[in-house]
Length: 115
Length: 189
Picture (cartoon, rainbow over the protein chains, first blue to last red):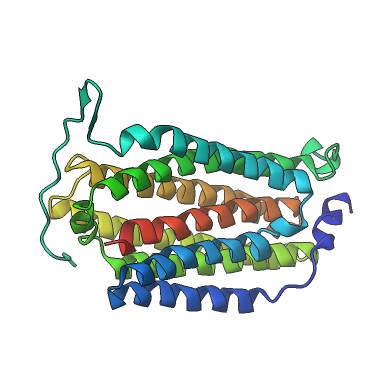
């Protein structure tokens, strides 16, 4: 059938195994920051998020099996996002500049975790 | 007569699948812009760490577990659809919908608690980002689950099985967005 032609190109992937790896990474991303070292937090929280996203995109979305132009479409939007970041960060990440001052007050600290 | 999303393949893949990728491309810009803005403010304001400390890591982690598991059932539904087993595909899509419902119920409980403690969308900029980002994501979860119910109902009758893959790809994207929201809102304290 025509609508199965694309799907049948997918090779066998052990999806349960991928899911188990994702759960293991989730555990690491929760426990890692508890050590309290900033660089460990960055790696275990955000580094692992990138790895998890890659595993989902590759194995569940089968992004690696799509025509190359699909990657270009998605990649272009990511580049636009980075351009947005680069274009605005210079202003957003400062409190004041030439003839302007950001009227911003830091929020009051909230009590410890409420749950 | 077969729908054009199934039969036409001018770009080398079915039009329906191409449309899903275009939707996701626009979603990357929406969520990317939102999260990019959040990261900029978060890097500038160390005081936000004290705000983030009020979010509950364990609830966030549980919801991550729920979404990762629902992604598994979604891709297993796709696998069943590939094999032409519409009933099994439908059943696995229903499991995915249960995951979506669980996610929303947990989030409702979480938000209710936070709002009762005075942390609302207008409390300060951190909470504005928190409710906007998590709320926009939750809307995507709800929309995806509703669409999935329609796809599952057709799949159960052996119809339009190609849509199982399409809704699955969307669902995995929603999962990926949460994979990044989780450390940003719940872990970076």
